[in-house]
Image (spheres, rainbow, N blue to C red):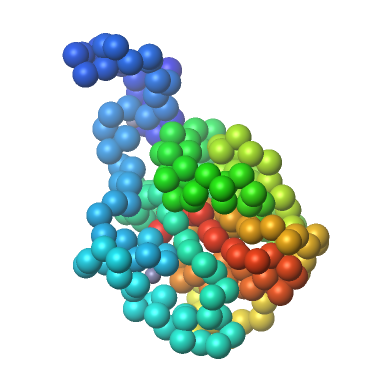
Length: 230
Ligand SMILES: [Zn+2]
Ligand SMILES: [Zn+2]
């Protein structure tokens, strides 16, 4: 087995700590695995952003909840990794340069965080809805990273949303983005809770548009689960 990031051969070290454990398949070498920085410590209860004290809600989330049209739209976001330099490079290679297999490196943490983040009852009943890409973007990339992440959970994706506008919005300010029109339309309604899946939570605008679309179409509550919190 070669490291999915640096391509060096992975040497399985047996020592007293793991001699009794079944061999877990390693996708990254020890050095590259250290690029993955799991979010822990004190996190915003709503969006997983690191905060000073546990139990806090960050300033951004407090701002969202003050706006009538967004209040309660997204119940909670949970993320797995911090957006450090290594993760920026990994996401770029995975998403934009089509290194589909790189997702395997995230699987163990992604599954474990998913089980930790959501109650077994919610996991049993919720629909997993991928944030859709536009057709052009899907064609360019060859896959939707959100669907690829749902597959890592051994679950099937429920494509309840489709995208109606282009999605180049990185050059706009946060304010402009909040005011942008909803890029989603509903394909199929549900009366079940939804967990939206995407690779990254940045401002939370995209996820909130998706959440609000689902809620106005019958879903009682919408959460999101993202690989990275930027
Ligand atoms: Zn490596
Ligand atoms: Zn927050």
